[in-house]
Every structure is written in C-alpha cells, then in structure tokens.
Image 1 (cartoon, rainbow, N blue to C red):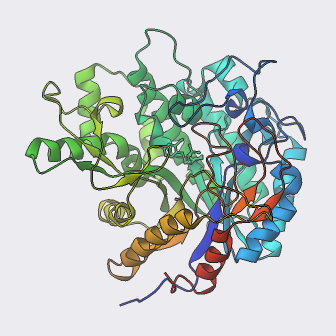
Image 2 (image 1 turned 90 degrees about the horizontal axis):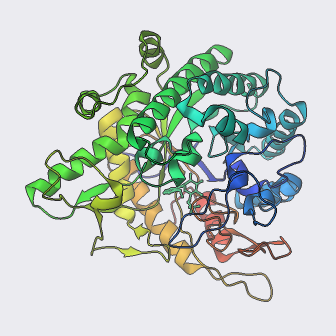
Length: 477
Ligand code: P53
C-alpha cells in the first residue's frame, strides 16, 4: 500500500487568463465575454452588459495586471515550490474576434514567454483552452455555441495552440467546467460557458443541450487533432464537481440525488465514453428536445475521448425530492437544500472536505481514469496587516482538511491522482461575482472591489504553509 503521494505528484496552483491578466486591449487582444461583465455581490452574480459601456466598471479589464507582472508572480510560485501552474490561453489574444483565419502573433508570443518563464523554474504549464473567455464577437455575430460554426472556430484556435506549444505544454483541458451550464435557469453559466445570451421566451434547456453538444463534439475533435500533433499530450476534460447528497434516507431523496447527478455529470460520460447515456436520450425524447446531432458527430465523439478527468471541487450540496416532480427532473434553482452537517463560507459555499474524497472515489468508480484536482480553495475576506502579511489560518484549515481527504483517497482508496492545483493561488477577480475581495490566494494582491489599490503582492501565512506542504510532499498534513 502506498503511504503517501507519488514522487512526481503535481503540486501547483490554478488561475484563468481573464481573471488575472488584465491588459484587455493590449497585444491586439479582442473583447471577450469576461470583458462585458461587471461586479456582483456575495449573493448576486455579476451583470452582463451589451458590449463595453462607458460608465460601467469591468474588473477583468485590469485583472491583477499579470500580463505585465508575470515574471514577478511566477518567481513567487517557484518560491512556494510549484511543480505545475494551471492557466488558460485567452482565446481573444490568439483570435481577437474568433472568426479570423490567421492568428495574432503578439498573443502567441505572450504565451511562449509565459510558458518559458514557468519552464525556467521547472514548473509544468497545465493549460485550459476555453475558460469563460470566448471572443465576444462570436456572441454578437453567431449566438455563441448555439451555432455549429463555433466548433470550427474553436478547433482552429485549439490547433494553433497545440502546434505552437507542442514542446512546452503536455497537460491540456478543453472546456472549463463544461457542466456549469446544467444550471441554465441563471444567465451566468450559459454566457460564460458557451457565449449563450438567452432572449425572452426561448427554450433555455433545449439551447443548453445543443450548445453543450457542440462543445462536446469540439472537445472530442480537438483531442484527436492534439494527439496527432503530439502523441504524448494528455488532454482532459474539466468538470465542476459537487456531490448532490440525498438530504436523508428517504428513498425518494436517494433517487432524486442519483437523477440529479446524472443530469449534472452526463457531460463527463460523453467526454470519457464517447457517447450519450440513455437517460439523456430518453429525456430529450420526453421533452421534445430536437438536437442537431449528425452521424459524423457520433463518430467524432467516439474518436476523441479524454485521457484524464480534471475537476474543480469547492463544496457539496444536499438535495430533496419535491412531490410534484414525478419525473425526478433536476432543477438546480429549486432542489438544493441546506445541509445541517456542514458550515458555509461567507458566500454560502458549503465546506465539506469529506466530499472531496467522495468526489475522487466517485470519478474513479464511474470512469477509471487518472484524475487531476485542478481547482479547490476557500474564497474569503482577508485582512492585510501594515507589513503586508495576512493571517489566513481559515484558509490553511480549509486546504489542510481537503488535502487530508485527498491523501486518504490516494493512499487508502487507490485513486490515481495526477496533481492538485488550488484555485486562485494569487488573488484574482472572482468569476461568479467579479469581486477582488473574494480572495483565494497564497499571495495577497492589493486591490479592492472598485479597482482601488497598488496591485502590490505580498505573502500570506498560507504561502509558507503551502510551501512546506510541497516540500514534504504532503507528509505534514
Ligand atoms: P468564484 C461556480 C461554482 C463552482 C465553480 O469561483 C465556479 C463557479 C463559477 O462562479 O467556477 C470556478 O470566482 C471557475 C473559476 C472560478 C472558481 O471556480 O466565483 O472555474 O473560474 O473563479 C471560483 O469564487
């Protein structure tokens, strides 16, 4: 039995381009969906505006100015001992509008320089192709991923990246948290996942399944193209995972939990198995949802299954069956209930370390593929002291408890885990709310929700703690 993490375990940290780079109009970059999103609050998603408006504040425009400061930041990651660094490639740096035929050289050069900087410290880049940053032009001109043409635009982008960085990047992911859009009742996920902006009266659900289908096909085709360019590539999917526990042992609640899991995670079935599970096909039939699904798509899905499963884990949910819901159809806005056994963060995210071990076991039992925890972390308010230090023992507690469970999954359950990259290793703009003050970092960045601050970086207590975790390969937790 193994008693610890493998020697080549990829400890690191994770970010996404749009949440930290800033420089939204530099180096020929185009406007992305993240550039038209404002600031929300702990209880409200951020608003999406029609284009960039003069009197609005858009936090991603500056981010934390990583675009100019990355050498300083990567040096700090190296000081913590990172073995890998997960980021994304802003699609709009490479194809500013998304539908060009030729890529933008300045954008490509930026990522060459960034990856070289990582490799200088033996930090392996782990790269997501599409992380909530679609070119906004693809939304206004094509309707985002509701349009089949997006498959080819994505593939052009993916192929350019695969070719350019084939000797610098080995670990790739196609679409970040592709399954967030299972919550199509809200506007946030459809827009950030797929560039889908719903009009009044539209059948949101049908559009979601269609957009997700095009993405699944695009992902599978990208896997095939990538493997041709470099057979050593490891190309994964990326799933937002949250167990949906039955509220109690009432059989209907147990079945509701199972049916809800099916609806939230069928995306992973398609990525891994290369076909849709029957429950989704039956559901489309019952609901009269007609999907543009060609025989070529069917072949593409089969030929482009993923090598590993990347997933994010922040919280768990409990779920309760509603009497009127005889079909056990999952509705994220109605079915989730509070779990009295766990506490929640200031943003209402329920803290459940055991849920991470559940996640690792669940994915393994379902798919038998290597796993990669590419996001996990605690968004919290921090108080910076005069000398720049931050005493964030709450963050250390959260991460330590989760790493303990992760360790049990590896050592006792035999889960095949590639690595662990806590989210927002440096403070950055929140995806859901646009706040800066929902902080995840080991590194503090001096900037507030309105954009005031010096952008100066400083080490939090968790910085030194995580440094020690990496140095001892997790044996100190
Ligand atoms: P923020 C919702 C639920 C779980 C993960 O989220 C989510 C979201 C979207 O808000 O997103 C992932 O910044 C995502 C990151 C994001 C991170 O989790 O809202 O992949 O881009 O920043 C944390 O606190």
